[in-house]
Image (cartoon, rainbow, N blue to C red; front, side):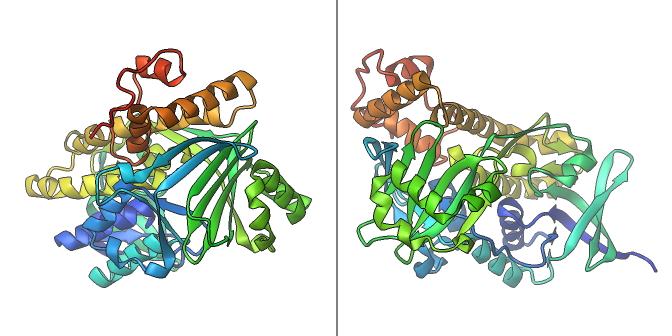
Length: 422
């Protein structure tokens, strides 16, 4: 029995945050694309999702930001950083950012992703294949000319002018391209939970202590997302200790949780989020490129992993008309994408690792410096805005120079502390 053969302009492996956005943008441009997704349908698992301003810009461009169901989204502007025990260190206010993206948008699980996938299936009904597993690339010499896959167990052969690997940190496309990757698994991961919150819970809280982090984010339906740092791979061990032990730990970190933790009644309200970082020596090859976690997974401290995949997709979508017109999908041509995107991605990876080192620390000196920096940021509008605009995805340059770092640590006065940059 022969292989079924399909021809398209762009074949995308993975319908995650980057792949689905790219496919929808291409459909809106009238460019033929096909998405190969190994899952049997849209994602259903528990995951907390904060849409940063740059992610909101992407959804707005897709025509979806204002169409997200109102019962499933909540705008949050104030984020309070506190010491374990509840003492406030610093407050960051998204309303300082330029309108209209001067907020964070907290969505219920997978809401934005489902909106993207629904729009894609309407725009390109035959362009999203679920239960389709990528099995390898097709080459003409060293040039990628398509891919092999199985769909519902049947072999498929896809011809494409460009193949995009959007298949996550353990990318099979990257492996098939022979692109070397440094995959670092962080020693910490996160337990996620969603539970009812009291009516007055309107501002996010992020508590840091000695090797402990608890993030609390208001969500739609008078609920709260909790992000609790645990040792990597210890989810089952935490569950074995019981819900009471988890509730007590949360109250110890944040006494204000006493009125919230009774809502945690079943482990089905929780999920596990492993963390890892991917660095690759290149993102492009003749006829293929990598986006999102396949190219540059990062720690969630930067709050930008999914957002960066979305921005990758926009950048590729904007470059594709030129590549199609010139019929040039060589690595040399595709490098325009990598040149445009790598500086911001690398900066955010470094920032996330630096935050890991200080925020997750058990070292009393590092914890002292961390808390001192937070307190300085609370008084220093200029540096606070630098941090906020970086987290929001609006900066490609590092937020602090060496002198800024010394000022942030409180060892040097800042004559421009009250000046907020535009």
